Image (cartoon, rainbow, N blue to C red; front, top):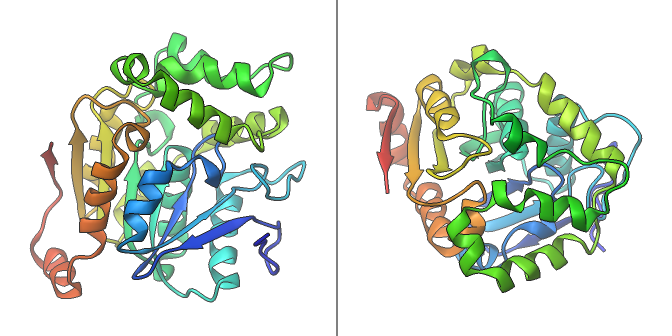
Length: 284
């Protein structure tokens, strides 16, 4: 079992593939096992893919405290130190995108390119989900992990995908529930997300950045990605048509190709972007 040995909190991790290293940071209540297998397989054909369980999730250590976004960003850096990786690409999904922003701001020299997927900057400038949508994320003391996961489906998957892929969604659920996230961890993660606010610091992000979101995301509305792309100096926006919050799960191979293309451009092209590009957007 690969567990970090020099981090403050022991973290379970996995490394597959060859090529430039990209570290994946999972979202709220999710462990590294939640990433779609076909997404990892496709991306690892072009990159070395590092996935791990955030503190409190999966097979990582589950302390009572320390779930602030800054602490989870420090976990990422300590894991990279443990793996002997001075610099990597970074992909953060949802809550993982908040952690990725924190890493990119506080530890800029450790990050090459940055992908912020289905995420937000926090604070008063972010556009929140409706109350009815938000309530589906909240975990209560009397809920089982399976009940909490099923409750969130209608706001994490697009209705069309959910209706057409019932078996795939069930199989995904089973993988995620092999090592379920305790209720107290989910509650502490949610509190950390409520306190997160990096709007004013986004211009400090110097990494070439891909901001992506599904156009049918009702949980983290697409306007949040527009805000991120407009505030980060070297950002490109991808609006993924007809996909929900879990766009990576709904179109894993297509999005692996999108990310792989972004990460494997020539270094010289990246330098040209810094010299000539201005924040903009593209749609698919």
